[in-house]
Length: 115
View 1: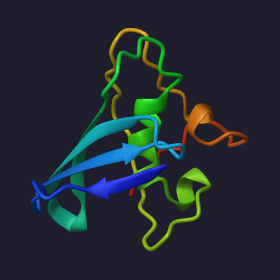
View 2: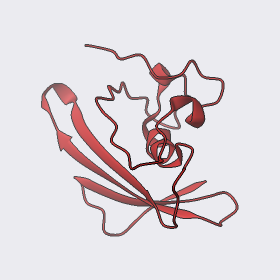
View 3: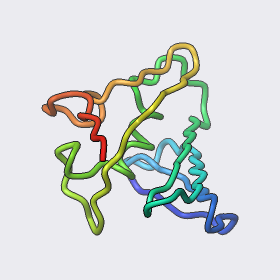
View 4: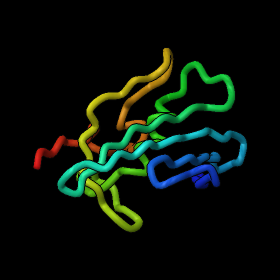
């Protein structure tokens, strides 16, 4: 799919869309960033399908995860690799949250690194 950064974005809030490869579906995403000490940052993200989607096969979680997947997840990053600690996932009824759906053949959920 294709991600697009929207003009309403700021340094602390990124607004994006992700359009599927066939151009049929577009989802809206928002990342809220909060700087922390030691060069860290807190990130809260939300992805929402723009059509009725009861069983999304983890699509919305994958929309978000594809943007921060790094070496510790077994992904090759385009520019920077991030160490991520996913603390929680809240999803609507019928929505999935499986790492395997995002990265087929991966070992599953990323290991959590404490530094």
